[in-house]
Length: 435
Image 1: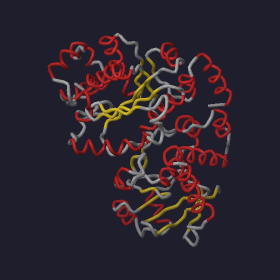
Image 2: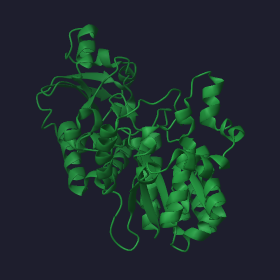
Image 3: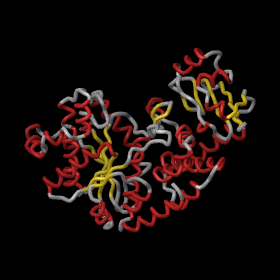
Image 4: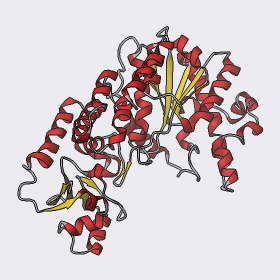
């Protein structure tokens, strides 16, 4: 987006009275809203309480949840009260949204362990002290106490099968002739009832979420109005994808987890350095968008970084990596990660004496990970490179590779080189030239 068009968009932000709506719309969070004017008027009073639900399906959240967490952060920074709703109850069913098949059923012990891991993330982004302290609740506190007949009489009478089969999640399953259990069919009712309980307990007036939650959110808004007579609102974000069309937070190494605690195991954690590298490897076209969505940098700071061209765009990527990592892991971890990368890719301190092969940019972009491993001499054949991948030993720029079909691209170049590793001790460089 050009500086001129951003200026015009910023000018349009004066249409909003509240800092909350100015921030979320100006930074690109808005996709759908049930009533922008009404929500803006309420937010301007600094008495807005809003929530987002997070089911406990894993011991950590990943970058795909970060856009939601940042919305809660902006709500608190604008004077409102954010509620983190942990889905200890709804996880027992599993959200069918965006899924073509039923989720795996988890035991109570697994749900409790996942809940404990997830809790740690929010302390980095929200303050749970002060005048508008963030609130953390678990919907198992009320859902587990509901009697089945009581729930059917209270909530079931407010939903029609006619409406539910038009919801995107249900409709897609039916059209594809894929089974949807009665258990899953109840999920929208339970999520809607969460809004009712939060309205009663905390005067919560807003539910935020991703665009895939629009149907669940609007039914919650409607149910709360019917049962409580309260004016409530729904707000969703667009699906965040990379410029090349990839899903945000998904890499060749799997999900980019927000938890750095190694006790959770490598399948659910990312070290601060790995997290920093994820942001450092952002595609050029995504830098401005990601700076707005995932950092606290001001619009002027973002515009200045966004205007950088050519090799200077790397400065913007480093700024993004530092800002995003500092939010999650702290300033010290961000600086240490940048220093490690500087030593590895620029100063050559950890790369001193490493074997290197000169390749052109065109040659690199035509190269797959198997060819890269054999080219730098870390594998004697494609078969050996495949075995390294299967064993979890092959890495690209210190990120583990799990697919032998991965292709290299210009976005993998860091300060003129691409680092290939096998295990912790074998490293080599592809030195990229423009010729």
